[in-house]
Image 1 (spheres, rainbow over the protein chains, first blue to last red):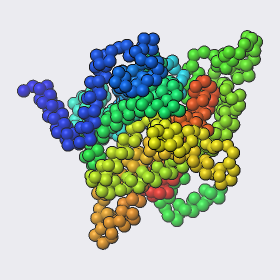
Image 2: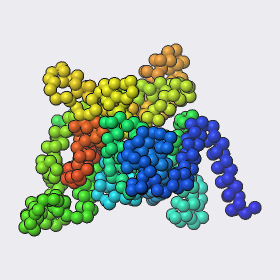
Image 3: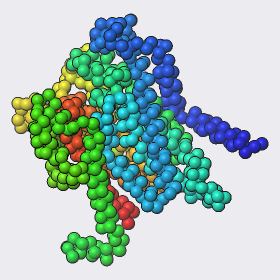
Image 4: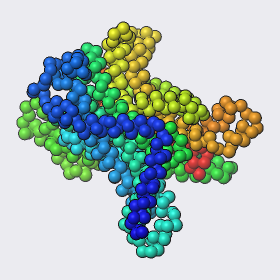
Length: 296
Length: 342
């Protein structure tokens, strides 16, 4: 048996062990189920509702129709089907949430590992910067970034990503320091492993589980922030997202005329996705750290 | 030697363990000063990224000659080298001069001072309520963890936490202000006062306007306190001192109140302070939705123009509030927990 196949078997075993423990967290399973369903809907949106639901010019209905058999959730002020928009909006909200969380966690992990590995003045300076980001009101910073940059989906992703990484950086740094105090790192150094080798081959695999749970929790915050930015009119005006739908609803006077059927669905969708990611994240967290006793 | 440092010296001689507090204090004050400087650097350079000329943006729609533009540019100091603009900006910011708003044609500092009381009132009340609620429910949840009450408690809190605050606000307005079906509109749709009351009637009127915004802030905000309190109490519950307290025959309720909760409170209190720092920024959405005449609503008005000096000034104010509250938490912490700062 080669080292490689041994390594793979060990990884497969640990994934199986992880899944067995994850399965005992009922709330986490509900979250995972909800996510799978929503992901399917988002991926299948072009088949389910067709790509032209966003089109303002040849909308199928008249403005602000109440829910009916033809439009189960009613129509918006341009006569577009709200159900179609809701399904289509899942794509943007999920994409922005996932990409922003990935960016944020990637920055956080990189900064955390580098600061934990090198230590000394480098770590002091980096952690000072991290602390400073941590005390900044991140929503305000994201809003300001989205204001000064051009309106696009990438701006939103960037604004969320670069304002939310410090928590991850702190956690990963602590974990890195803990990992590096173990004897096998000393052994690797003695055998001639360089900085790059130690960080990528020994530290990174050990912080990955933490990074995974952090990413899951980060996504729900990112989705909420995206909705907030879109609601404030700072989102990409060319695409439909759930936050943008809420802004449209408010502009169409859905509040004063009591059109609750226009307002309710996008908000529920946001809450369901954010909750599903939070439940998954908490379940992963408590599998990794049973002392938390959370999520059950 | 000043009297303050002399008395601090006396304390050191007496107890011998308090040596570190002045040093801890100096470290934290220095850190806050550095953070504040970093905020000024960011706010100055961030708003220089914007493509285009601030003077042109300001005079948009108003016919202006090249000569007038040059005069304006000189007035705002935009013809000076960048580093000099920066030092001017810092010097002004430290004396409370945060620039002029395009939109209101008034100093930003003055606008902030005008709107601050409304924000403090709204968010202060909300933070007090949701902290108390979170502490209470968190304690109950942890003490009977794993039970039905705990699962229900955390479930509801997590669900409300996942809800966008502005959406909840809009929904509450539809249900309780506009009225839906059999529910009549009971509360005003927005604002802070009806305008013609005085004395006690005025207080009641403001309270009436506050019900829905406070409800929104509390519903979305209490989960965090609950979860932190629950986690830190769970952490304490394995402690040997609790077994000792039980062994000497204390009632369960006394073990909780006198022994476990005070220890579990420490991390939660830090978080409450951090929340206090967040409140001004955190109420942007709720103030916007309820047309509350505070800083958050002002920030939204500034964004929609966009009135950049006002956005920039409010950015400094919000970040400053965060730094101040973090500093207060840091300074208070060693007094609550003698193990810190030694």
